Image (cartoon, rainbow, N blue to C red):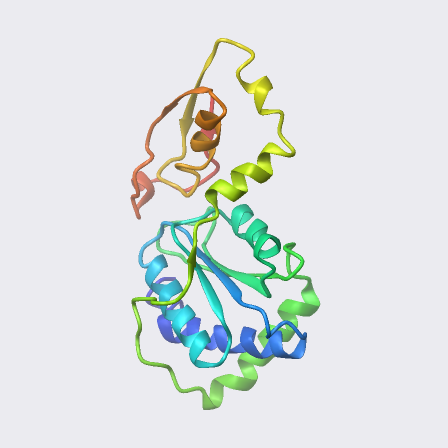
Length: 214
């Protein structure tokens, strides 16, 4: 829960464990991509983690805007990154936050990876000194949206999307899909009506479940 067990100090500790894991796995020479969702303080957590990682000698690149997990995974291979950390609690209630590690191959981390990172967290925790709080990031940022859309063009027949005379109603429910799914459809020429697209850390007093497209 945010501000309970999900804190800036704990995020930095997990980041230190991931940094050690990258060294062990031979990926430390590449930058680590950091993404974040629209939840409360998500960008601040990401900035703090990026700053802490660089202080430990691990290069980091921060997403320039809230970015969906699939686009962050795409960014890992697109940028040739060591992997990615995605700050998101997915569909869980607004008071939760989470941290996902995406390995260099841009797929889900296998149990042997998460088990090793967990073990490193336990090893580092007794002597870990929390770093000073850093809510800004002065390093490299990257916007993945247009490159991600271009990649979608290679697997989606976007011309077929405008073959019929219809409108699409898109409700991201204040979630991370806003500006992404509707943005891609509009780019393809689809008539899209979007609702509940603004950032609301309470998700309209509902759950940030799957977006609705009708």
